[in-house]
Length: 288
Image 1: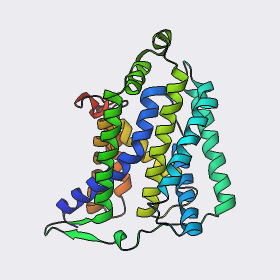
Image 2: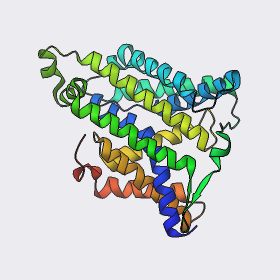
Image 3: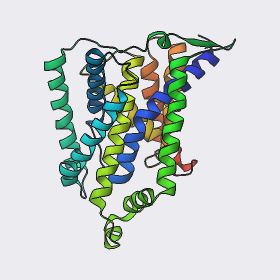
């Protein structure tokens, strides 16, 4: 793989990370919740999609019409009746609760699904590619990149142009004052949780098509999402998108020079940002 091809493949990989990380960025930016269950919930969505493909014969992409609403509803209930109780001055309660939830989900999946690696397929789309001469673009990774732009674009428009988006931004800045104006933060938080888990579901299913997964895959997905959010800057959707692209390129370019160390190179780039640019790229990106 030449360097240009590695960069392009990294950008495509970043599109997948951006879909997944966008929900985590929303949780961070609005509710200041450090959700350690986010990766496990995405894997749970992938397993739901896998079972739907077996039972119904649907394409994994088609299962999203069921998986996304189910996970969104679960996110609404989880935020409204569980995580809402953890909000406060300290982030520790939310960390402990979501860590416990992640452990429960992972162990239930291990009991019901076994530890074997699973993978979904879109048939010929998995291996189809566009030959552009100097680079080859996989149809599926390219589709994910476009999907990430569409999803983040819609979410950014919602946050910028709708009453809900304005309420989200106001609550993230000063929830007590906003409540005095008649806006109910609990309701906004619940819907934000629903949107976040809908994005996690899409990212989990998309990842389950691109690569194999197991009940223990959530931890790595969570790390990638955290790194994308921190590199991009907490609270910035487009910053998260750029952070995901940086992480994806770091991994593929790193693997180009050190074939078995691509993920490690991504972690090192994340640590460099954390040490020297802790505010992330959002200092250069207009907040959504």
